Length: 110
Image (cartoon, rainbow, N blue to C red):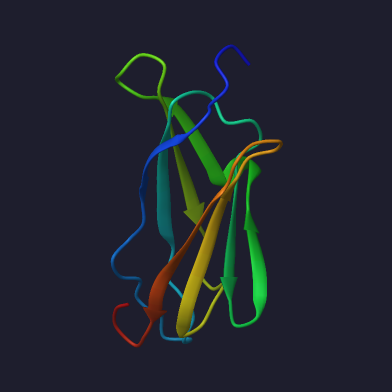
């Protein structure tokens, strides 16, 4: 790893997540921009008293347009959580994390 990150520059989460007919979330993405490479990036979702880990092939990395910045997109699969508040945490091995909370998914939108 040539340029390990020291801080998150931006985190983008959807303003709304739809529920599918089965009452669970549809697929959505959470993106982050960091000032360097993130070792083993992971996103942990907290909902309904459970944790759901998004990692490995579910996280895509691309070098951002500005030199030295890296963008990551976590693709959260459908069907993980039902209606209620979703918390999340971007995690990197041996580095700081970011913890945030989203609004509840409902019959239509958060």
